[in-house]
Structure formats: structure tokens, C-alpha cells
Length: 374
Image 1 (cartoon, rainbow, N blue to C red):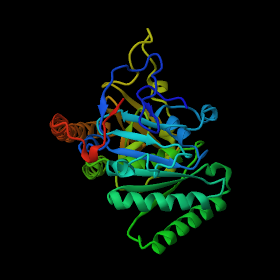
Image 2 (spheres, one colour):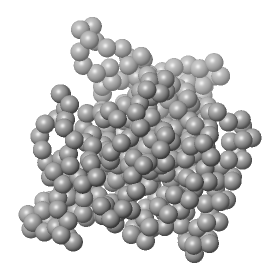
Image 3 (tube, rainbow, N blue to C red):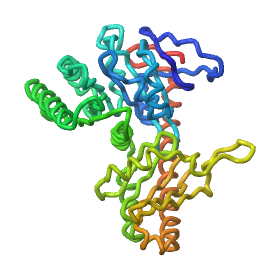
Image 4 (cartoon, rainbow, N blue to C red):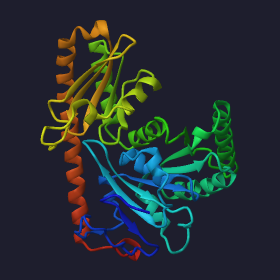
């Protein structure tokens, strides 16, 4: 399958795949057993049976590919590693395992894979029967939990656009019940599985990935608290902190999420709001960016740039938005606080990178595992 720039396919024995023209050519050594590498960039592992839609999900969320375009993607035939690093808080690795490969085979050291994993996403095709997929899910979760009990286990019940409303609910309920019964029979009741109904044809896949990524952000409680303070002092109905590139939200306030307002932002293209410069150069989104969109329900959608890749999206009643000066002042205070949180996070990352470099200088490879050249 085609890989976006920055992704590398890795064969069964770790052989690097030739790069296409235009891809980065520098080589670097990645030690999968390195305990510090996962600390710098959390790892998300994607698993499923064949033809469940994993490549399509990645392309739609992180590469802005339309659902119709994803229909022409080939199935994953090798382990693909991608890095997502779009903004201040969105930074992680994605490992996509082909459905036909049994990574519990002796050729793989699955303990190393799970040891550095922050979240494991198992995709189930809701239209192709899910009994076999649930059996594979149980095996995977059981082994992964024994290696790393801190993994977040996420289940995407995918392609639900082909199901009726009642059938969607029944599929989710039945899958949840079967999976938890299997875990109970195995004596693993303490394992928590999060289930999401997802589709390529609405906002649900972005919402699900947002929830997964949020669990990998250590600053999440601080961000949520800042948003709560901001909206309570500004009279704002709801606020999201969005990653502009992927359109997943990394934090929101504690008020319930209204799917209609969330979906409204997902379908908005930032470049459509601002446009490009006359010469077509540069980015349409910069530090001066702001947008005010009046909706037909007496609500205003207010968008402000926070960092180069982060946007604050607020939903405000028209009568409240008349006090725009107060909102602007509170936003400036919010922005300063976000910058401080980001600076602290960067110091932690730099510290871990130094530890990582010191570890590599020792030249030790735990369990005799060779480093893989990428």
C-alpha cells in the first residue's frame, strides 16, 4: 500500500522498504526496545483482520483524503510506521500491522512492541461479522496487557454507515457484551475496553481518534481546566482545542459535546475561510488568523489561532459575543497559559531525549535485540 512521506514500511525481519522519490533520504537507527523512545513519542498500534479499513482511517484523519479516494487504497501488506507531529501536543507514532500477519509468530518480539505502546486500536468491520474479530481481539488484549498494563485498549466498530440506527446500537451492545464476557472468562475483568461506532462518511472517525489521542496527552487535565476557566469567565457555550491539520480535538471543556457543533467544525476547511496569498505562497493560517461565522441559530462560531497548528473554536450566543473585548482579553490570558504548558512539556521532552541519547551511547541492546535501520 502507498505510504505518505515520513512513513516507512518494515518487512517481517525488519528490512527497510525502498523510499520513493521525494521522500526523506536520511537514515537513522530506531531501537524498538528503547524504553525512552516511547516516552518521547507515544505509540499507537493499529490492528484488525483483513479488509477492515485501517489504511482508510489513517488517510482520512491524518492526510485529509476524502472517503471516495480511500476506496482505491490497497490493503496493508507490511508493517507501516508513521509519525504524526502536527503541533504542540499532537505527537505520536502509528504502527499499522497487516491483518494477515500474526505478530505473535516467533519472528516478532511482541513484548517489545507492546512495551512501548500507549494505545492499541483494534478495528472491527461491522458489516463482515465480528465473531472472528472479537476472538482475535481477546488474544491480542490478553497478551498486550501482560506486557504493559498501562495500554489504552480502543475498539473501533467501523463501517457503521451501512447499518440502520437500531442495528448500530445492537452491534455495539453485542460486541461490548461478548468482549467483556470473554475477558471475564479469562479472569481479566480489570481490563477496560472503549468502544466507538465509526464511519468514513461522517465526523465519527475524527471523534473516536480525538478520544484516543487525548489519552496520550499528559497535559490533558490542565488543558481542560484552562478551557473551563476560559468559557466560564467569557460566557461561552462550548470550546474545543483543535489540531488544524487532522481536525481532531485534543481537549474540550467539561460541558457535554454536542455532535452537531463538533461536526460543523470538522467540515470546515481553514484554507477556505482565509484563502491563500495572491502569489499562492505561504500558509492560510497564521498568528493573525481569526474567524467569526454567524450561524442561523443565533450562535456565533469564533475561531482563533493558538499556535501554528492549534486553533481554539468557540460557540457563543450572539448577545454574549457583543462583549467581544472581554472574550479577547480572556483569550489572551488563555493563550499565555497554553504557552507555559507547552514550554514545560518541551523541557520534559528534551530531558527524555538526552536520556535517550545517553542510553544509546552505552550501545546496549536489551535481550540482544538488534537495532533496525530506517
